[in-house]
Length: 65
Image 1 (cartoon, rainbow, N blue to C red):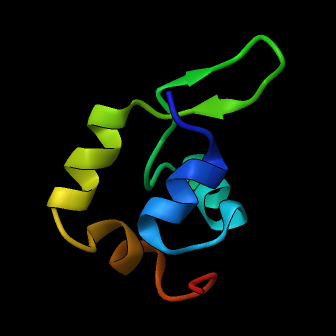
Image 2 (tube, helix red, strand yellow):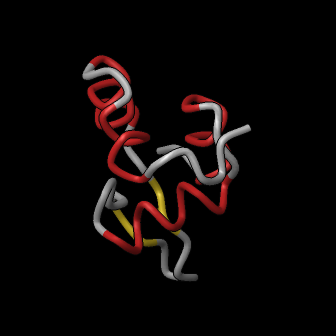
C-alpha cells in the first residue's frame, strides 16, 4: 500500500494534490487506516499510470511540480 507522498512521486505532483484527488473522487484511496490516512494499492496506481495522464487531465495542472 502506498501513501499520498509515494503516489505523488509516481505522478509528479505534490501530496496535497493526491489528497485532493481522493477527496473529489478523481482517484479515490483503496483504504483508510484506523488513523484516517489514505492508502493506494500498487495495482491501482500502476493502472492509472498505464492509462496515461487521465488523472492529471481531470484535475488540471494545479499542484503539478
